[in-house]
Image (cartoon, rainbow, N blue to C red; front, side, top):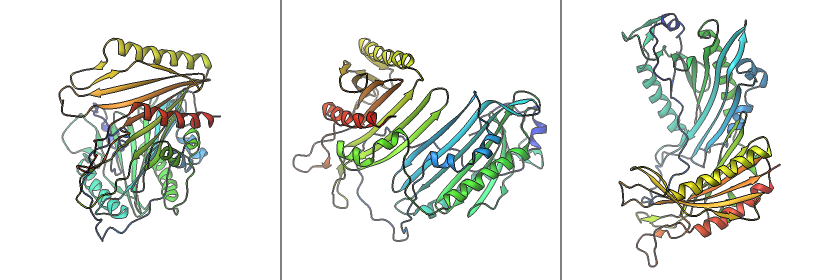
Length: 439
């Protein structure tokens, strides 16, 4: 979302605003979400006929933009990088994004500029709406909301203000089932954003930036044309039939089946995030929840949580070893001073334990997080295993529960809880498979 910035001197920039906008980028789902008490089951609405959502990954979105086009918009360079993420990969919800940035790009005629290109897609179904119906509702609602924030018409500011972000008029486009664009000026410079509804998919493409030399901004025509070219290719990609998408890279070494085998059914994922800047990183996460058979209206709880892997390639053995040792000392220091936090949230750490058989060196730590102001809330416990392997460090974490759950009030029922030893055994099994798959 464009931030607030002084634009009293941007009267000329307002003349560049000729397009339309839509929904701002949404944060990915909270993959560290605690397993919560289940609600009574409900039958889907007969009108909500299921719509199969095709798999999609952030890497797939990146690949939909030809290198020649992408380099003309955000060229390769020392000050650039790529971010790809698959934030949700369940049967009822899929989200993925891809983006490039370059803070010192040669944009021509000796001008150095900051440029960003971002792409995101999402689709979701609910109990009462299938994914196509949901997309229509969200698209229409967001279009109305974005029309309300327009404050530049015919090149003139209409709200009487000389500060704050400036938003141009919505411009209808012809991509997908429905589409429009909007240009804006704000903290991130001048940008154009294209919003598309394609079947069950909501697609967003933004391009723009500002210049460090020469004219302060790129031209409105430039950013609009660029966003449109990318939107055209991404819309075509998302219009394809559903097919199997292979997870490549480190996250592909572990499957949902592997996670289920180590923990318990059902596992979804992985959600994947990656950055290929100077220090390369990738994060994989699987949501795990035990299926509980229950009658409609019965109250039940499930054991489960999130298993996450965070891999960092430091580029040399010395740097990786330094980071590993620094992390080890950090957890020792946290424990020695009685934990970390404040009056809102406080985390305590058990003694760090050295592990053998994983990488070059490894240790495990169990933490417990509480909210001092909410003593009735159950503590959140997490197990972390950190491994040093060559030029890389890998963190494996599980936050959630491994025991209990089921029909509330049934004989022998126990609320879900974490058994750290059981979690660590499952994590060690998965860590061995992950590390063996690294190249």
